[in-house]
Length: 346
Image (cartoon, rainbow, N blue to C red; front, top):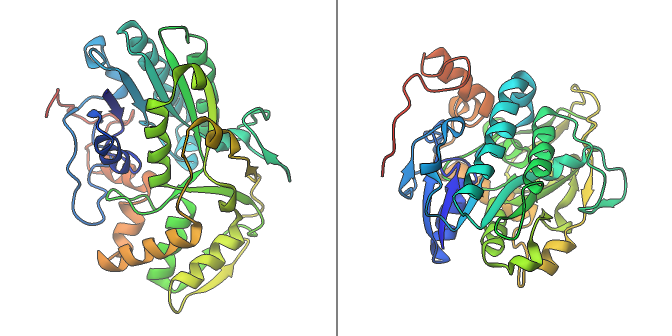
């Protein structure tokens, strides 16, 4: 299958591209390279790719593909809150336009990376895909809008699937440190403290980047009549954990570290536990392999192996800080476009 993978140089894309290639797919990437330099360890071997902003796509970029796997987005809540209008422009409008272009080009499958944060505050019960969507941030709201708008154009020739990823964790050659487990392990390595800014009580569903990639790989080949226009939570119930439990797991993985729950950020309204049974039923043989404890050990080992430094942790692996650094250096304009955007390469 010939697959267009948007965001292939991001945190998840750098893990997913080789997984899809190993499954036998012909993968072509699409990315501007905003986060291509956020490396921890050697740079991965990227697939051939289009160097183009998602907002500037034309029909030529989607011609000749059997499927689109759409990961590209401004991908964390602080950034979305800082620049909500750009978040909607990229995450919502450009994503929906991509779906329309793909449909017009005859692309049959469209896999969309949504998020479990669409559920907002889910209460004590496990939330399923049929639960009310209560997004609390511009990032999560943009995901809900794309799901609605893309579902509206689904038909017998265009089959979207919405994969609502739990909060990702784990090593990627292009690292993110502004997601909870990755952040806490990094802080423990650098400072000896597993510092929790909230009171530690919110629930978070977590899933390893490799397990997300495996879910997308399964979705590409699942019978269309089984998964057409369906949403699936991506993760596993054993990784429904509180932030305090995550912190304790990190302290177990990082020698000579200790948990500090400061509570200085106040209560966090984003708290939810998620039911993941639907994806196991839809995708034969799919079962996430990584526990939170496994991920904490992996991250500790990789941080030590590649010499994590405070500067890179704070500036390169945090999305908001990295973009602000690029803007300060004159490389990005106010709309988060590179001052010079290249053409097709690879």
